[in-house]
Length: 154
Image (cartoon, rainbow, N blue to C red; front, side, top):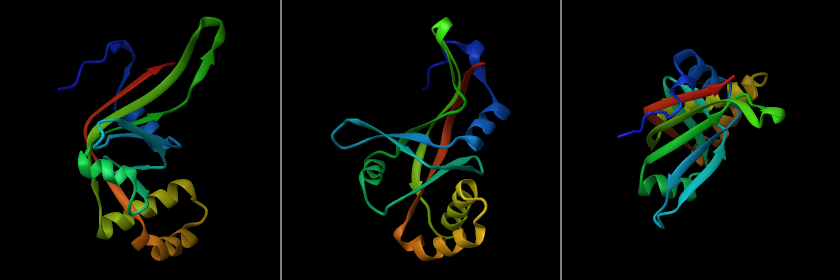
């Protein structure tokens, strides 16, 4: 179903993958819409309980595409460094293939709290108040992971 990594000597595993997903500032969600075109959207996310969660408005292209086809890809790029004199780059990245679903209830609130903790760790009280005000105007999507790969040149 999935091709093997071409440069397998650069493949990274568990701890490295988890670190990149935990520390990444943003990821890029890839979906396919009814028109057959791929769409890649950068977004904030959190890696929680071996799944990726992100929030968005309750309507829009991302959700339309997920309703059309919930198979998605999600990419996070970690640290990079251009090696100009070598015409190369040091990098680390993770690619996830999975299925995306809207969440509800405690799972939705827990994901929103984890997102607030990740991006605004010094404002927990304010984050909880914000979530309580906005939870009904916010969608939270969970990506259940089918395949995950990591690659690095360090």
